[in-house]
Image 1 (cartoon, rainbow, N blue to C red):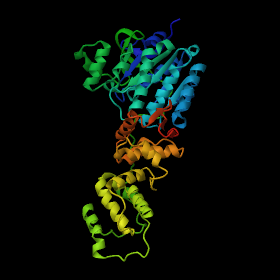
Image 2 (image 1 turned 180 degrees about the vertical axis):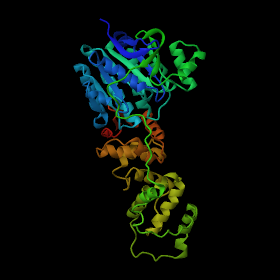
Image 3 (image 1 turned 90 degrees about the vertical axis):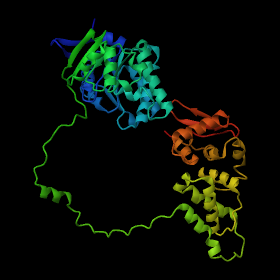
Image 4 (image 1 turned 60 degrees about the vertical axis):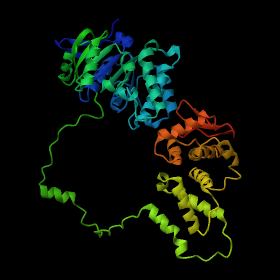
Length: 482
């Protein structure tokens, strides 16, 4: 028996039907700019095929959760669960053939990509006895299969892109029929788009997207302009499940609606302008009026301040202390002050060494017993949260990190401290801060440098949680916090 999905009407007014069984075998790509009716098309297809096939929807904006009422879909709010739990849901929904909506609303792009990758991998890796046919709808597919590098870490991008590629290229044998929708064909990975055999192209304005849409539909370049003139809710369709030649489809009405909708014009308030001014300033006159603060003095350059502080002992000699000052507590206090100074990250080690000497002098230590090399190592340790002397407890860690350059020593000691105290592995942000940079890429390159030289061994589990082992010490951090 052949099952048909009623999508609306074609250009001649006849019913526009999509062959469901053929769609399961050949996959579908939907493209259209924002406002072209792309989500309306997906909703019509899901409503008309509900009850005939299992439906699995990856929904970045949470628009399709309204299907859970009349059609019985199970709505999963991904923000409430861990990545491992999301993968578990995927395996269970394949086992029980349950239609689900995975709502990614509330997650940042990296979280959405990580969650979608785990969910699609869970669907893909289901046991053979659970390979039942299912429509897998991925809205805003350019997020999960970007054509170029996304603004996320490379590991997450590769995982998401790999899961989408598996869905579209190898999912058919596992019963998974990918239906992907995108606003921009140019932003969607060509390897993913090329696996679809059915196409529904909506209104598109950018030349590069129109050219790619025309190529997929088998149209000449001069005919691509017609894609720009399509009305909202009208699509050009082609493929074995739709038609052998391009046809026009006008999508019919739907029974459910999204939680969010397009903005509509509403009348402005009729209140006169003076009344509106009274509303805007209501309650403000009751608050005390504060006098404008005096302008702050113009800040002096840091080098000038350091020079003036360095001259202080010559200007007013302090009396010699009756008892010698213990240098270690003084240096520890000065290092704590430098490590907590946000401006210190942008200064050179030589400038910070001068600042350190001045701070020690102001705390009563006439001469700090550290040279520049010794200060560099103590500062690296201080940035890692180690302020005491490095001679005893941390001597093994320093020995294990002899191959580490001085500027990377702080990152190494931060890892060693986390491992020795049984704490989670430092995040990329924490490593970047200790390294004295705001670039997460540089922090990851520091880890790669140390791993290439067998100083550390980094492991990342399926949930994306990283742990690091220092082989020379036998210390291992806990996995990073989720």
